[in-house]
Amino acid sequence: MCDNGLIKTIHGHHSHLGWDNAIAPAAHVAPGTRLTFACNDSSGGHFTPTSDVSAVADMPFDRINPVTGPIFVDGAEPGDILVVHIDDFTPSGFGWTANIPGFGLLADQFEAPALALWHYDTHTMTPAAFGTHARVPLKPFAGTLGVAPAAPGTHSIVPPRRVGGNLDVRDIGAGSTLYLPVEVAGALFSIGDTHAAQGDGEVCGTALESAMDVSLRLDLIKQTPLAMPRFSTPGPVTRHLDGAGYEVFTGVGPDLMEGARQALSGAIEWLIKTRDMPAEQAYMLCSVCGDLRINEIVDMPNWVVSFYVPRIVFE
Image 1 (cartoon, one colour):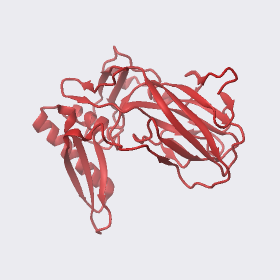
Image 2 (cartoon, one colour):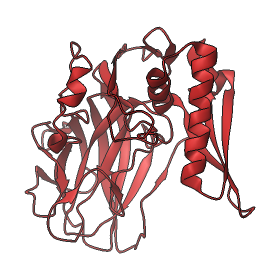
Image 3 (tube, one colour):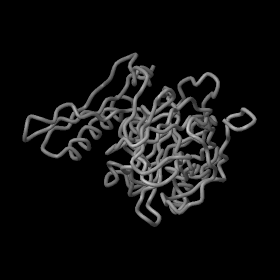
Image 4 (tube, one colour):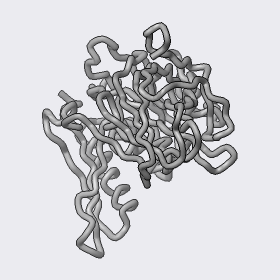
């Protein structure tokens, strides 16, 4: 904590757009410090409640996915583990989902831009309306959490990395603990890309993107090598979606990526036929609440990938 006993706040203007160990820290903190990060959404505030689909084409792609930080943790050294205890989220109440041409699992099939705007109650966190088509249960989390890599220079913030980054794991939410391998002195931790909801896979490339504050505590485990990020989570991970069961669509074949595409395509076709949804709306809804899962990966030469559509969103 700060000297005055308050949780230290890292404001959103302390943000950056790439992983670089030469970026000056926004703050130096001792292990055990509790912090609140003001996180921008992945568009950096480009989309507003009055935006229309033309804003997708105008999106400044050189400014996407800003993260707040970095934080220098006193005593952190290469070979340590940075422990990120996530306490809670304070959402903004506004968000967006977009189909961005050239991005997403079915980019070759969905070439036109699309945009959905969301408004949700920050106190009750009741399911948010996806137009007239569905109501999606919310589960806030941060998509991008990481530390600086040892390699010099600026590294893209878009792909996930050994040191974390754009992991987009829905289950790293409140009550979870993330463990990251430290590669540079001070670790240089940053966080952003906050979401109010997302399906596993984030298949169209965006979720319910929403600015929010994140409260967490940073700790260290000294000299304990860690090959890749890992996390622990405090209980059932899909209870917000499980209540009414699922419609599930499979992809079967020797290529997991193609299997994922097949399974997602099956889900979209079902939504079009049974829910009377436009194709691009079905695609975005799948990204916000549907889950891709590998069901079987041992019976060569074919594997099974499934896409789970939660029926609760239609109740």
